Length: 207
Image 1 (cartoon, helix red, strand yellow):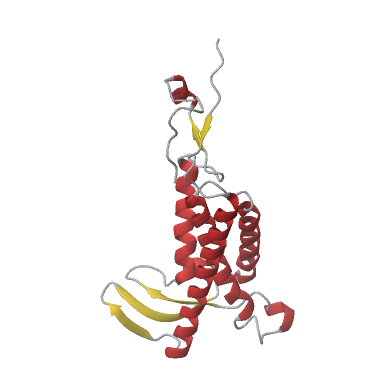
Image 2 (cartoon, helix red, strand yellow):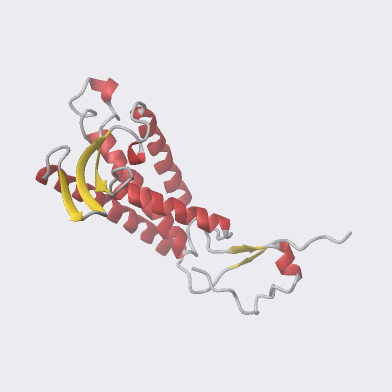
């Protein structure tokens, strides 16, 4: 029985270098974090808790809400657990980002995820009752500011949007075999059917 050809890794020359990919991811993370925090400050300074403002009725409203739980108001009784999870996720993303290079999509995915997580984590650490509460017992239990309300759905914020969109994108990249370094794994079956393996053969364009 003959051996099956190993998966082929192909990468386009029109892809970001490692340094460029890391800078893009970092820039997007800072942008996501800044937009999230600025919108929350705007909501706190212009609205009262529970107030609702029409934006594009009946599709979109601003509604000032404080969320002690996870994204989309889930798990409100376990705030400190979600704070710990966010710290671990942020640390994992930072470590994985060191392997970036060759894919714009992975740079955007990890950057958006890091910025979104950092935005909500900032609330957990620096907003009441984490600050001004019962000392160490309340640390990391700050309430997240949510304000985007759509019909028949939970209230969320900019950070939640970046987190969800980034996770969907990352799952899609994993599903279609796009690696962190920009290479794409081709199945052995496709290779056997004639996928070019010669370095001089035309390469498949990558994102």
